[in-house]
Image (cartoon, rainbow, N blue to C red; front, top):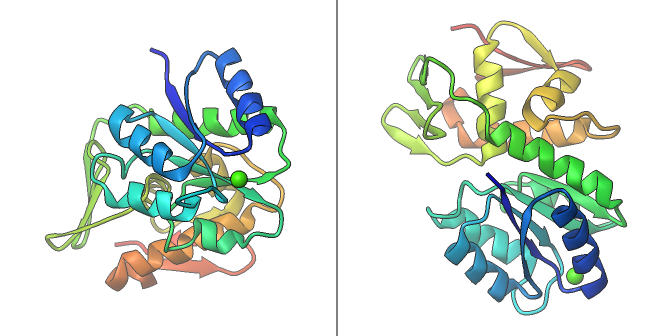
Length: 227
Ligand code: CA
């Protein structure tokens, strides 16, 4: 089954380049050149992944991403942000936005397609035999990608969900940043340790009373406290 990818990018050259490479990879490509059209297309077509430029006319990528994550139809669609060098990365993968990944311009189309493939692969993960995981009052549903604390549903992005799942499934064991990158993001990348830290920080905020269960193992990685 072919996957559909929506690209929202106002720079025609970049749009065409990305479009060309994604089509060559066998993806169905939808394109929009401003934020509002991009958001409309996303809601209407429900693509499998969205490549979203940060600086866009009309409604910028930040607002589009927020709107996507607020809409129950689109909240689970992975978003890869395109950013120019120097734009604040924390803001992009930060709490306020909820993008699943980002790539800094100028980038190679090959890097982007690898990134997209990795994200789609982890999103497609075969459902485990056991579909629910329980840790004290924290409940994780692997089928619906939902998480509850007591009876309250916690809204997580796909990346945060996979990160939490990886940590809980390995409770009591240290997961290095590289292992987390490999398991949660599907690739390793120099300088990406920071991405792990940012996502852990964001995840801790969202899981409130369980924040302390994610222990920082200095210089190495993270460990979820054993139940
Ligand atoms: Ca732009």
